[in-house]
Length: 275
Image 1: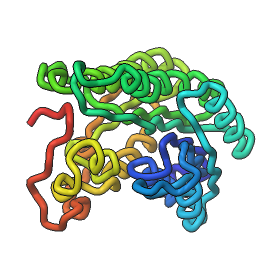
Image 2: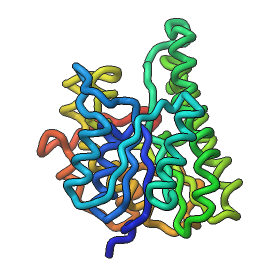
Image 3: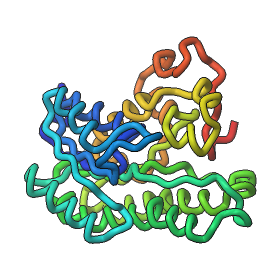
Image 4: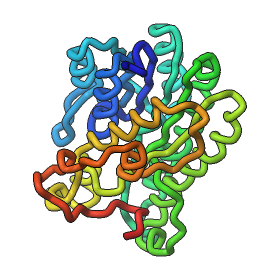
């Protein structure tokens, strides 16, 4: 059964990595996909644009709309949402996947970099949710999914990169607040975070490089977990989900195929997950 067939799913930061993988997973179920990201032209280091992902989605037979988006700009977000709603007749799901990362201490983080992380990791989630709300209210299966971690107050998660941590925890706090605020509107709001490192550009350029890739899982595990959340009843709300734990709760027992290096069992545990 294609539970997302003809549902419109808007994904920010969808030109590569986890956003791309979620787009393809939902497209395989017959969803309409809005591929929203800033990248329209190929980057010398980072693979993928809104157009390359849109072509991949289209190749599955799903309907797709690529939209250039700057999540820091209110007008850009408003234009994207109205374009998507007009093109597909509504919006059922908003996935706040766009993110900015810099794993530096408070002392060594330029305030301009903190501003960027705050704008993308926190402010954009609130703004996208606000502007999508009129359309989500009309859906019978409305979901907001934020790619943000469980709020773990262990001091070690603050010690080395407080600026990044607080912008991601603010995102997770938005999940809790919006879930309660929108509960009566039958709009589910949840967060999703990986248990292990995921092989993405963020890992390659900010968190460990190619060596960490060998101890990582493929983005497909996050896409499968996202699909499990998006096909849940809207009463499933206000949760900070961990990909592997959620999939196990839903009856999945086989995880070997997610390993970047086949046979790997000792994965690198992701940020904010205590071992």
